[in-house]
Length: 260
Image (cartoon, rainbow, N blue to C red):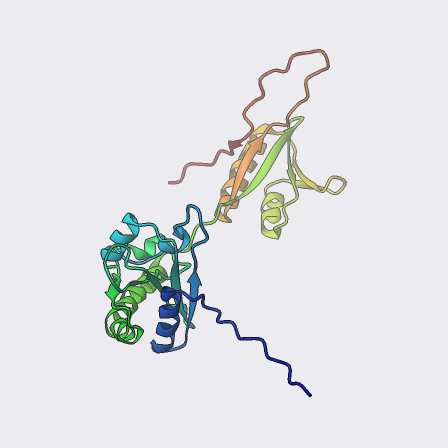
């Protein structure tokens, strides 16, 4: 019985000198690394999505600024550490290797941190692995730990405050019932009454002085909850056959008492 011939195995790394170098290098570095080759796709292609995060302000950065990167490789370890591998780009023989900046870190975390500048290596993955292990990676670890430490000291990002709109209607103020129970309680504590038919809260204008005091007090309390209060007049439709008139300002912040 004839034995069916097996299909040849295909190397996931294209047969290029840079791709082959990077693949062998990944197997010689400490830890578990993968190698991804980024080929020349033709056209105006400089792999800026990768070169923009190369963590270097010395020879590698200078080469990237002066020469187009039409192909490169990225080595990545299981902990997220990444190395960028490129042709010499005018620097002669061998390859350029640089660390890539840690991802998902705010720009402020990099302030004051010295870049772990890259190195030029010979086209020998075994000697290159030794240079990376004793020179580049230790400097990367120091810089990365400084970035992570800085990030931990940064204040939490400020999200946009919520907004609660109070709309004038025949002298009364109408507010859509807030989803937050604490905000709804602030309004009812300051004179707003629930109108079940419209699922809105209404502050009567029978006593304008009391109404103004309620608006100021509720606005201050809502601000403490991270909610901005806005007063808005309803938009009116012009009568048929008449020219539209200029609309009043769409929103204005509710007044709040001076803090002492």
